[in-house]
View: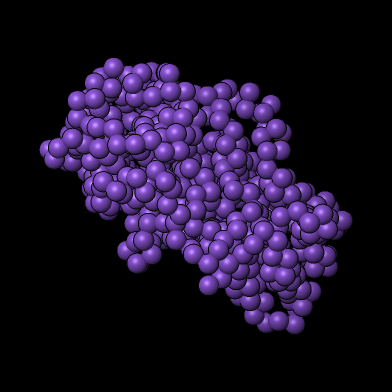
Length: 534
């Protein structure tokens, strides 16, 4: 069994040696006829190799991981979205994708979903590379790949390595970017390609509604790129038809299954309320502090900055292509920053949305200032320097190199609370957690008994609170979950028993008192068992 301690200096040294090999390719590129292919292969190997400690750390890194796994467990048994599962800000496509690892026999755990996340990460890097090559040229694409590659490979920031709901949308956005780049270069992508671009854009809002501003910008640029197409109007109509295909299908299916009101109330309106956290001006002023929350993200910005500064030492200034795409790059970055900051919650994993717009901005500077590629090998080395310095400082100061220590047992650890639950229930029984502790679903493999697997939106005041709370009660009465857990006091955000525990809500308290019996309290969490089979 492979395992990692907190200071695997030899392992990480090998990882940086692999990164140095990537850089070395740039010095030898003229002598390697298959340099682009070898670069992409070695880049994928680098990401997989350096992320091994995170993959083998089969524990919750971020509560969102447990939330989304609980959704997948539930959908595997009760597949109707918005009836059995409400992903809050996470769309149905994102959640259904989590069924893929289980379908392949990997089960529902943290390692399985991070493997899926790794597919999205590598796929995003590949489509980004292909996009830059189409927009500019191959040398620009090869150099522009390095900052996001080294950042995503070497970061240990939990917000960038856990399976986040941004990873699939980022993959889809990069697929869309690649499709637009083909139109931009050839002035045509074929009607099938244009239709599929629309389909990909239409998928995004149902993966994560937060990326809609970026979808709009890419869609508008696609229309502008189609302007010189000999069948401009027909092409735009095909694009719109593709874009409407997924939304129309999902709305029609939701109506057929009787959850159309839920789609509107809880996904659309709920997220509009959630997105009302701050003004654009406030968001702009918060950006420096937001970026500073992640040292690794600052390293990424630093690597891009060094690359851009170095590019200005080359004399030739190519403007024709770059000026045409410059406006799009800026708008895409603004849309990404808007999406990342609009909620007013500066969750660092929202910065995932900015990785590729920033990388494309870097590509624009590289292309505008590049001439004959004489400084390309040096630039490749310069990009690695911030990450190498960070590693060196940690090693010298003997600070932990690896935050994800794994033993020989790579199974999900089971808490005392889950052990108590499993004394009275089976994985096929339904579980409800009042509070926010979704990992009990992962540890027990029990599906949700309510559409939301945390009760934050039934507790905190907002315009739809009563609607969420009533749905929570209705789900309890309809689904008869075998176990009810009150995790207030041992959960994310919700720890005030006097105002947030189930006893503080009269109807909920009455329902639990009449239908459940208390069976124990461990880790400041109370467990209740349904009185009789219903």
